[in-house]
Image (cartoon, rainbow, N blue to C red; front, side, top):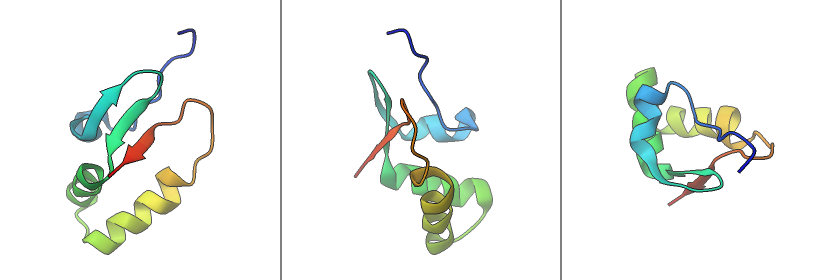
Length: 68
């Protein structure tokens, strides 16, 4: 693979939600929301809002996949 993988930062937090790494990094959505809640000290609704606005909305080659 010639392209580098894209990981969410900070990796020390969000790597805990990785379920697979192949052509792209695959994150568990629910674990990721839990990590966002802890990282930002926020509730579930605010974490989902952060995820939708700052992570899910990004469209680029190699961007991670999020699975439930």
